[in-house]
Image (cartoon, rainbow, N blue to C red; front, top):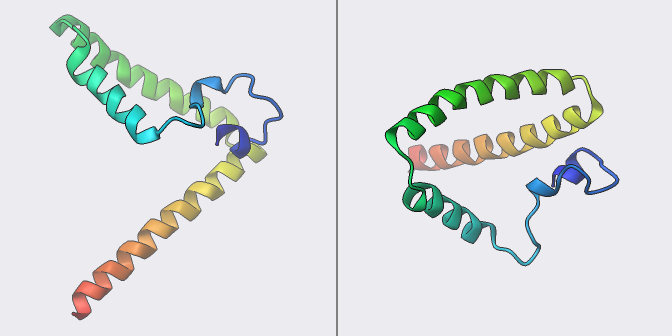
Length: 102
């Protein structure tokens, strides 16, 4: 999806975003959550560090996004996201309207 969204010609630099085609994303997510929630042996100090570091990661991610906002790839990705969000909002509107009218 990342390759297609950004119109990349090769897989270089985006392998981390891919899963094997025969993989099931739900199984992957469940296994990942289980690993994070139950199998990692983190001390309170480790957890505190990760939580502090997460705000720095968020800040740096926003910096990175701001550098690509004027690119065609970003505009394409933004259009896809907006269509997706519009679909969710439209479905919610229809559901709420149906409940209200019943």
